[in-house]
Image (cartoon, rainbow, N blue to C red; front, side):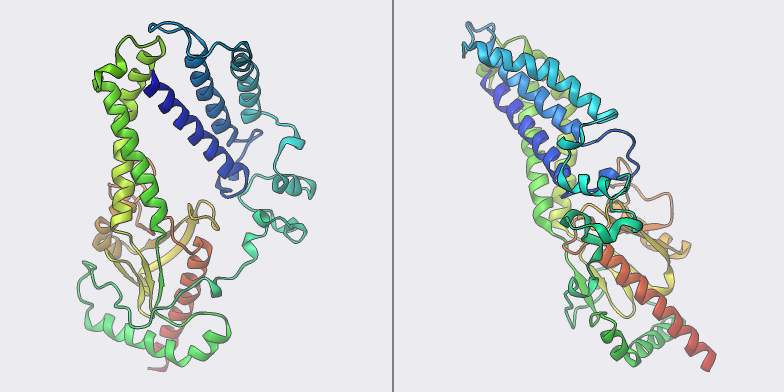
Length: 373
């Protein structure tokens, strides 16, 4: 019984935390494609629902004997949570929620005429925004980069040595970059190479939570220690049945996140191209790029569309960040797309802006060099 109460309370608090992360505006990705309701209310519903399990275990008799807590007020609170709050929250998740109960940054957007169906305010009302959650797009990438001169780009990559033609092309790009270094500095572009590091703390936290959850759920499945599961209440069989599904999922998630923490793929941008510890792309191999998710959040992910030859070479090296399956990784991407590791310390929009600027300028420099020849 004690284990059941502790586990349900932990998951309830986790749901409340996830709800607050989105409701407070720390993450705005959930707004993309929003319909009539408000998606983070799902976590609020989950928090109330699981918290009700905790109260039920406390105030109702179990197979072990009388209820641990005899309180009519707690029973009334349980009824209100399950039969009043939860249905109302579910309705708000899919249909409508009172405006006065919405966070201030959402009310600001609604008041300005924004339908709040995108991660950031529409361009027509951005000048009216004052809340920090609504003004994140106004920052520049110039102050976000941390150059590290002398860093060896792509030294651990499995890419083959470039051909003489590629070497000449790279030399021309480097020459063009050096010639325009002064103008780039005046435009706010940092000195290359630039290293964008992964904030591994988030990966460690998620990985450890996943492994601990897997251990606890596995213990429930096996009934170890046996004393904790003897004469269990009617809620314990339900918990153990759900653990059969939750344990492997928690273990997989924990191992995946721990791998990202142990082997982070810091991104290096140099005059020659973009690279990490596992792959290297030259500028001419990058055809396009875009951001999946919130461009200002650590959850956003920069995606580089590359040539077929580059993907054949580097696609297998990027499989752990490919998004397949289940939006994480492990399988090679179906499309010729190389993805950067999410959770970088620098917002994705800054990295994408820098890559796009350098990719365009490098291509122009190479074209001018060929024309002079």
